[in-house]
Amino acid sequence: MQIPFNSFSYTSKLLKAEMMQAFEQFFDSEYYILGKSVQEFEQKYAALTQANHCVGLANGLDALHIALKVLGIGSGDEVIVPSNTYIATVLAISYVGATPVFVEPNSKTYNLNPEKIEEKITPKTKAILPVHLYGQACEMEKIMALAEKHHLLVVEDNAQAHLATYKGKITGSFGDINGTSFYPTKNLGAFGDAGAITTNSEVLAQKARIFRNYGSEKRYYNEVIGTNSRLDENQAAFLNVKLNYLEAWTKEREKIAKFYDQNLLNLGDLVLPTTAQDCSHVYHLYVIKTKKRDELQTYLNQHGIGTLIHYPIPPHLQQAYRHLGYTKGAFPIAEDLAETCLSLPLYVGLQENQLHYITETIQHFFHA
Image: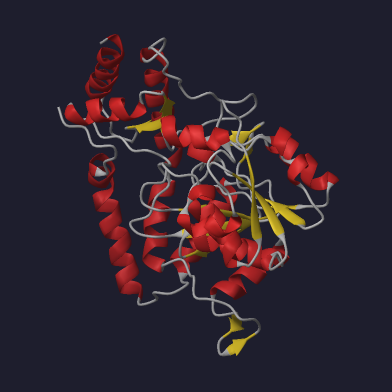
């Protein structure tokens, strides 16, 4: 049996007729930039995330970059960020000229550890950038309390956690301004690059709208040195279709994760995902942990099962950030995760017989 790490076959077949209709409407509209589809998506996504405003952008990295930019964060400032995250989170900090200050994750949830933030706060610290990693909400109450205590801004990276909640509140609605991605593999994914900002501040939302459009609110009148990062009208039309399915697809992801939970218990040193109290998990990724990670990945590949490693090199050890002066051992939890974590197949349309095959193959590996 061949099982890819990810597949769009089921959802593409399910949505094809609606997507073709959405494309035809886009095509016939002859309005291809910042039109009705973008406006509709911004309204719907803001309502979905319990935020007052949504600003559609070209991708998730731009969303974080622009979020930091409109907050006025720049050269000489420090931004606290988890040591275990995708590089885009850190790149956004660098783009505005600020310095990333890494904080270790919780060793069980892999999310930013609120207990370790305060010791990294300095007079230069301007913001905390928590990442709702793999689909699990961060412990936002503690993070927001620290931000208030030290007069810091908060920017959530919500790229992997659409519809995740902390104490019933949707991620992407806690921070001053927050960024997300609709990269095709995300729980809510476009058919190309796409992203957005969410915020409850009308002032910040308007600044982001101006910045995404060459720094211009009125055509040919440029208020600031902006950029070109507009959500594509066609991608917005596609996302409007997918929004109608997101809740059901999230439940399916949770069902698949529960199957893994029940069928991968007590296998050698295998560690399954742990969800913190008051947090929900929407399982953008199902990440297991074992010291035999590389051997297990090879074994699964030999048996036709695709897997991925998220992420094999933590940001502080990337060549791009060598100038920060970190060496191996600087952030041992993040480094351990990079050496032991493996992501299993999890996508809408994954069948029960495929799940049985995956879990039985993993069982055979550990029993052997």
